[in-house]
Length: 136
Length: 174
Image (cartoon, rainbow over all chains, first blue to last red; front, side):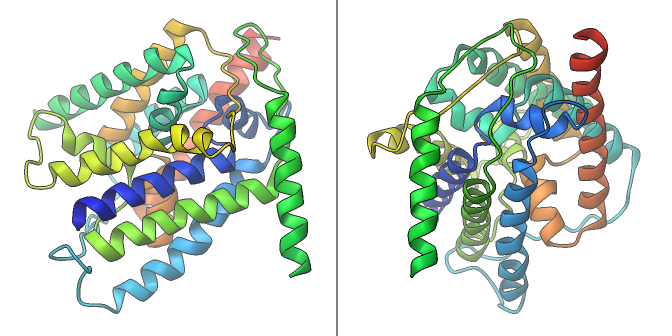
């Protein structure tokens, strides 16, 4: 059941990304381009997502555990460290440069726009590299 | 009832517009996109639904970079591997399903060249894994938990991303 639920969740997530227009890098970059052809759509995507997730999580917090899994894996870290800030800063540079973040890049991959064939393998390599660096 | 009908008509019109707008133009840096508040809000709510669903059923945060990170070495998460792979499979299946249902084609305008895109991928992957989250993990799930870490991370990557686009389009591309 956990596998089926995970598959469904990924599918709904992907459909959300497509319908919202976030699988299109130009739309993301235009959100970031306040001085140019500004397209505020991404703010509505985040707003819509948070409007559902925030109350949804709040309700779930009152429950003892998930339906199929063992426990809720709520992240526990609270400290604002250099790793968080530098990681987020580097992520932002890449996001601005390509207009893709991990979710939309995966969703756009089967559309087979040639760019994603460059972006996604490099992204996976970047993740492995960060894990190696973080382990040292 | 009436409101729902209006929304559907709007969605259809936007889709018709999308069909006419399938461009992959690596030269045009000033590409304009249509502001789509209704579709973006609806799509965002679906993303939220997926995040709540994953937590309610499996107890997991719907952070895509975190999910990918646990699938990859070093230190592969062997117990949750199938679950993570299923989420990725769902993400990959979304676009083919969308097209199969006749809702496509999906608009994509990529203005960045191939090698800059490879560099962007490396930065996105490294940064997200190093900073423990991306737009979904920090931007949606983290903010929804009112996590100060995620709020700081989201503000940080929004600033560096906007600065990058500013330099690309208005300093170099001007």
